[in-house]
Amino acid sequence: MTVRLLKVLVVLCSIVPASCAVQETPRDHIDVLKELYASTVQILVSQPDGVRRTGSGVVLKVDRETGEAFVVTAGHVLTARKDIEVSVIGKFRKKTYAAKVLMHSDAEDVALLSVRGMSVAPVSAGGNSELGQDIWVISYPWGRRRTLVTGVVSQVDWPTETNAQGQVPLEGPVRLIDATVGYGTSGGGIFETEEGRLVGLVRGYRSVRIPLPGPDGKSVSLPVAGETTVISISRIAHVLAAAGFGHVMPPRMPGHGGTPGR
Image (tube, rainbow, N blue to C red; front, side):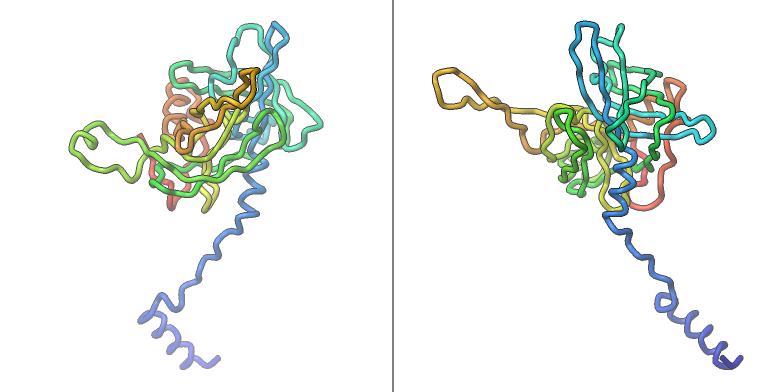
């Protein structure tokens, strides 16, 4: 390439920079899901009366030097915390790992666990969500295999003064999603689908009881669409910081979903 031709190209790029910019290739959703699957764990709680409970959790941080992984989950997964034994299963279901409860908040329904020796990967954190934003929920429904469920953000939280002014909130910390979930999904991660950033945890779900035909009076519970409650990532960050564990929160990634909520 001659010097004169090189100068012409430089001038063209300065006039039309968009034509010379390097376009970022969107990440394949399969690659994103592989990372999220490596960050999702199952939680087993053995109670003194022999009853076992199951839930789900997300790896926030891994200390590469000590091998300690910090797992966040919904606080109610650890019901009857006295004398309970908590263990965690990672991406391979052949082995369980003993977990230590580092903090627990009944009021905010958040718990933090510490696990050592488990091969897992941390997530990246998002922020505010938009109404109608596509999300994934990854969890262990009914204590079975890891499962992916899709949905959208059906309600966001907003400051009281905004509601008082009659404004319609379209963006904020996620409060409700319409994904259908069930027992065992509590504490499961809710991720935006573009980059796989964590925007919250499953807190609970509303269901209706439908009677079945027959004289035995049996019934079935069905989840109500749009009524799956969420512990937002901003709330999790606030609770952990107040408890002295703010250092385990992953950094917020720039771009969509990266605006910190309150």
